[in-house]
Length: 103
Image (tube, rainbow, N blue to C red; front, side, top):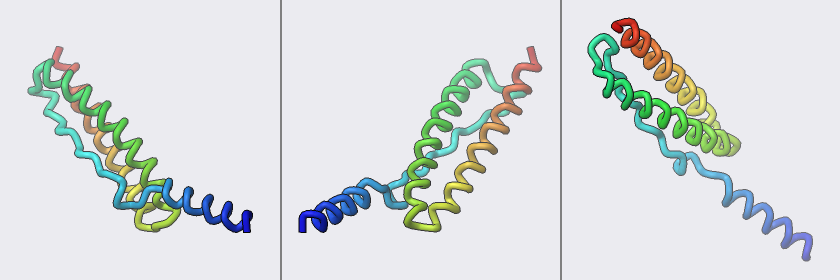
């Protein structure tokens, strides 16, 4: 009986600890300005926005990864999220190079 209760408690604890797909909050993508016309202040601000976005998306992907153990739809969302982070960082770096080339 004690073993059964311990097993039930562990199962409940693990289930409660694992986030559901609905608990994983998507992150708003930052707007990347055109490096050809952006001001230094705009580029500084977007640099911070992109850093925060990448950090928040890492948390989101981690949440989705836990949820993917229970829900296959979350696994697809992990791949999509990673693709979005890559696309945003590539675009940001492209615009940053454009901005720096103006100097």
